[in-house]
Image (tube, rainbow, N blue to C red):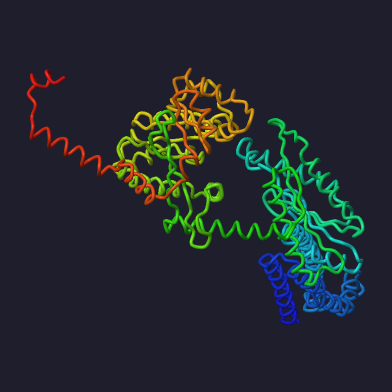
Length: 589
């Protein structure tokens, strides 16, 4: 009997270990819905464990069997009705049976409690796997599956379906200026406002970062309802958000893509992926158009994006391959008509696209972070080219605002000058007015450092930005350049010249020489000549040319460094061959 009870106890212990094994397996498994269902099934089996229940039932049957023999004898012995008590072995067996019965039922109760807690944990894990922990909305993983179901449902109900993609504008500034706690507050408040406005039965998810997506069905006869929803959400999110450290305001841009009845020709998964992709493209188009607005997806947007990606790839490869080359535009003294220097302009000699204007590739190069490398390569080429010019000719180079954010820019530029052997006094660095408002402290440090090395500094596109008189006085500029938009108006009949005259007068008052850009005809030139001693440039004097054509032009005008050096050598040789005594020199004078 005792041996049998030992076997039953071992079986109970094995059952306990089996349940713990299920628990460990549940903790280590994936939290996906399919895995969760598998674990629930295993827990269901564990909750109805036949072994543990069998132990309890067997113990109960054995208790009834042994108790019917032992208990009457024990009672008779206690009451003095029987001279001999019950059998000792049977009594011990019954006591062990009682202990086993208590253990079995207690273990079964513990097992039920354990499975219940595990199921609660499973539900929590399933919820976390489906939702965003910060906002409580669906996450990207669960949103994709729910969107597929929504598409299939719209097909069956003959409804249109739209995906709205939202992205907070300038959200990074909130995190950078006020901390991530404030950023989380903005995200939660924005999510709550979107959720309050989303129609019943719609899907709303946070896809990551500051990006949200909403799926709504609509009546194909009234698609303007989607426009109204997008506009309402944009206005709601734009409202200020109150937080302990202050009040924050942010805007949101939205992109919308839709499918109509009969338009879809793919499965729900492919359709959902395409809608998300198209809404994302439309959203970035809305940002490009000025932010705080929405845009519907159009096929041309995808073509533009594809072309943009090709440009980015081409620019990165072009920087490595040396496809960016300097072109040179003449700068002329307006009074004498004499060539005094060149402005270096960047061109992209693309194998696929040909010669590409800087208006196209410079903004992209700034966005993808290669403008510094691109500009340094151009300057290195320009310094080598300019060394072949007459030493009286200057070289002007435009600097991107991105480069001026680098506190080491002046050191990098000086290193290029030293490596090339180009004299700093012949270099004129041009910066735009927009640079003055990004980080005036860094700009002042860079400008001062360059000035100390003999480099000239010009304020480019003057009149189009936000520079103040105080900045003109505090920063050591050497020249002002009037933007071509003002100069080109001078050619119009009855044009008002007061703006240009005011800039010229301001330059005289601050002792700053003036350069006029965009001189394209003789009428403009005649007006500018009346305003005093100015320098000018424009298509009237020829279009920008590459290094080889520039050298040809200088050769025809005898303005090459080689010719200048030869003349200096000839003059030195004449002085050696026919020395003039000091007395004779005075008489000759």
